[in-house]
Length: 149
Image (cartoon, rainbow, N blue to C red):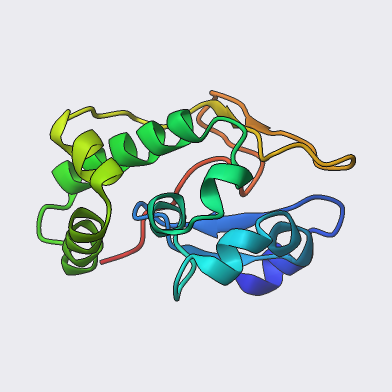
């Protein structure tokens, strides 16, 4: 998988699972998400970065929406995979370390994350990341991928 991602050289690309763990990324993808790659744990995790890194609020132009989205995706994932121990561990870590996460988790929002726009804090050459709603996603950044159990 990493070799395929690395072969994409003209755009940032990454693959992540339903928990938000980054499984593979190319160099532009690592550069675009440098803060998460270095401050999101091992493996880098978008939920962990969003709620536990002080740099996340500066990274996302709309941190509130990013936070709401990741919690809704995690809740949906928990419904699909209630016995996923890694997911349970992540939810426990976030619940004990982040009041922001606990508040959002208690809302019970669920979201199938098919479309959207994430915009990091603007830099002169930082593009927004968007993806289509169709089921045949063309970018590896389009949607979380489900790991084989």
